[in-house]
Amino acid sequence: MKKTILFLIPALTTVLSLATSAAPDVKPLKALLIAGGCCHKYNDQKDILEAGIEARANIKVDVCYSPDSNTHPAFTCYEKDTWAEGYDVIIHDECAADVKDLAMVNRILAPHRKGLPGVNLHCAMHCYRTAANFKQPVTSGTDDSLWFDYLGLQSSGHGAQQPIAVSYIAAASPITSGFENWTTINEELYNNVKVHDSAKPLAHGKQGNSETVVVWTNEYGDKKTRVFSTTLGHNNETVADARYLDLVTRGLLWACDKLDKDGKPMPGYGPTAAAAK
Image (tube, rainbow, N blue to C red; front, side):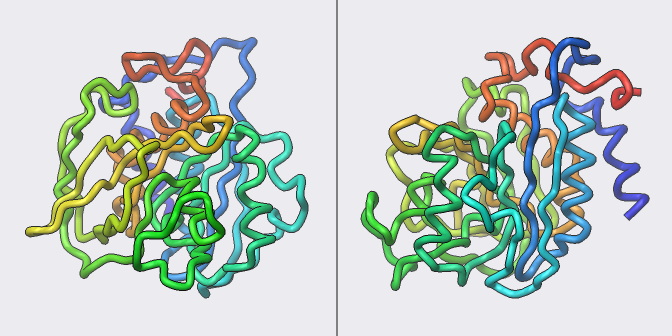
């Protein structure tokens, strides 16, 4: 893990093109990273994400981690209605496919409905599947589609792990501006059961003859809450890849409206001087 974390700092020379220091009078964005559940090495990935994001932007990441390795992990941070109070953005990186309780799902979504930005990584797309048949398109605005409405995309599964050819398709987006197409190591390509009209695809991923949306944004609910998502990020090596961390950080800054039209952080929201050394 030490080697992985050390890998993150030199990655600041990549196409993210962040400002070299944060203005001293700008407070860091406060992000809450929720990680844990089935099928992934969240104990490692929470540290990779925290270090990688903080090195790239003026963001302080707090972590709510569940060591439960099942599909219904318990998160202490979700126990109160005020669970998101004090945060500027929530990073959902949990894998909780069998958490279906409507009261719980609505409690998780409540701050996002009120306008709190969200970032969703990989298995977050397969969480909170309240529909009896989530493998078929569900009707937006119903209890079956609570989480999918927030994400802007419905996914139900993936095939075998193989390299994914990532192609950026939205040249005008500040999130992906200047990014070059790349191919991952063996990863999971999530299917697209339904892409909502409110979603804007930013990248496709291809394995063999299968091609799906793998990066997108969404405007959620009456508040048009900014939501950024990517289905990439199963394995530690991908999460630690500079190209992945650049993408996630830009998506987070965009969600908080702190990214300019050229893909650079707004003044004061680039990496701190200490992190840039």
